[in-house]
Length: 513
Image 1 (cartoon, rainbow, N blue to C red):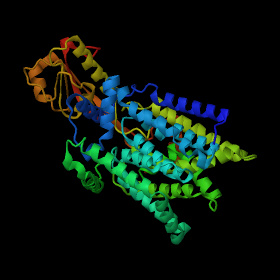
Image 2: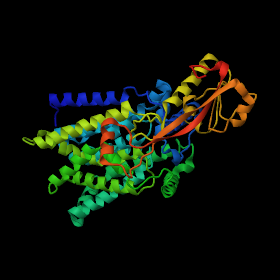
Image 3: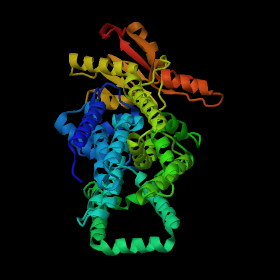
Image 4: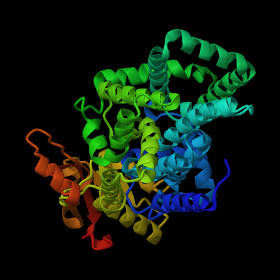
């Protein structure tokens, strides 16, 4: 299917805009707690060659990629987020792979939805591996579906991308279960005998490619999880991963109500879900097999993430992804159908609301500040601007005198300062009374004994280290939610974790006295 000139221009504009939105001001937001951890471990890998798989911090791929980026482009918050941003742009382009299956308009519509989805946009500017994982998942599935139209061996490439998901994050086990559920439900819908015959024929036709694909998948997983055979015992990584994350599910380390994800999906991704559901109802007897699979996968994903005990906003992208396929088909239909002015008007309003939400979350209010009434549901326990100012103050102290210890840090402030002050002469513990340390950061109350010994030589104050929106849905009215949507003013309070910052008075910088 050759490209028309107008279509090629549209794709070029879409990808350029997608890249601009993801890379613009990429280092402007202070590093999140998790981002600091990922950056620190990648820095350790680059400078000390130390890495071993720990399921607490997910798979190894992100650390190796970030270490390479640091080696080439330097070590900064912007570079730290470059991997996720590039994968976000790549995700926007994935519909090009299924373009021969769905048509020009539907593929472009899918690309538009992926490019401007508030959730995909925000987490493409966030140094976590969730957007890379959705890219690899989408590519693996797109290539597997594309195999139906070509004799070229695409299944080993699909296995490559599925393996990249597997060495990125333990969501591979959840996705695998969801695909089995969706496939089984689809088989029952079309009839077990017909479905089994289709599977047998697919296996018979692609036996060699499937064998190669299995080898590719297993080989990549073993190489990365053993850290290139540095830790051969970690070849049992699935046992390690499943055991750890099942325990986290039971204890609900980061818990929340079962419906935690649903308000976020409804308030940020109403266009994708609205279009997908509308299309499923309108074409319920004419859905293609890929559309049916995507819808069943999407329903199963919503149910699964309501059940799982880990409740964090970045898991939304794993729930949104399957709905993009049918939503794009329906958006293309609405855009090209004649005399469907009501549908076109509703779609236009929905797109406008989506653009507003994406802009607000990624550029206007990407942090939460205790004294700022604005807050986003996508932003989760975010480092504050005041902490970033302290980090910059420490860097200025180091630039003035790079020979001695310029700061001491104890407690919660260790993250993200371990990343922001990486490799610098910092004492990662409380100072002794006789230590000459210009800047001290510790949990409130931890410095009380030292302050008696310091006397007036240090000026201390408490600042918020990281803040969050204390969401209260009970008693929240539709008017409250509507006002938030247009103004982004939170309807309930913000909470924070605080630290105490003490500066030696005669060496205070940047007005910190």
